[in-house]
Image (cartoon, rainbow, N blue to C red; front, side, top):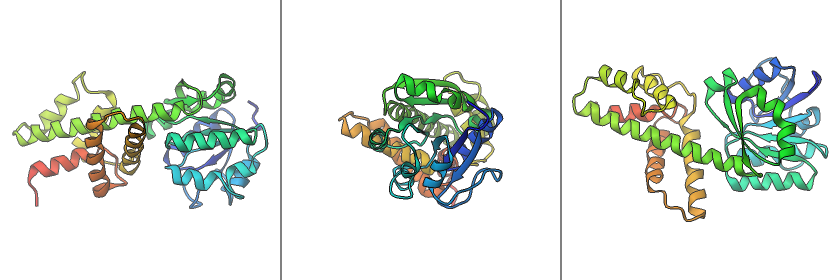
Length: 291
């Protein structure tokens, strides 16, 4: 990597803007496109179309919320692929379906463009600290090309397998994360309804080895009533929906995760832009019998 290399960001929201800061620390420059023309880091030039970003960049990093946004930004005469030269590199950090992931990989192949699906595990605190875990699908050669970028944004890269494997691993991880949060929320609701002291209950759970560090962070947020979005409910519910569809395509029975998806759909209806840990607050509200 030379100091002249430029990362073109397609999407520069809460996660990508923090990645951009860490990439700048190791010498990368940046340009960006977002559909709204807003967001992210004010020091980064915003261009009018994804194609212009691709033309100006050595590497394109995509961080958009869903399949629909990915399609809108990647394809067509103003899309990212239209602006790229053969031999280019696309790093798709978006959490999208396996089908959308495969379609982008194949479209890149037809143009001589390397596409790596590389969603990340971690929320905004990890993005800021450059301690994300990168979940990457692609060839060994592709991994080597992307390694300097991955090393700048994360503490670990998991080479999950061939193209599409990163997207599938991301669904596994987020499904476990969502189910764990739902179990925590329901158990806390029982404890409160049974008359346990709130402060004692939340404090005790923070000390239990059976609860993951991630879910302990969510419990602390709920204890303080602070649901500032580290991982918004609308995105977590979307990932659960993607998981349910992917499991159904393979006839994998997932009743626990189906129930979790319903809980997160309820949470999205109530607080779509809040952190998904707002489910704990919703369950507390129910058992408090407040009007």
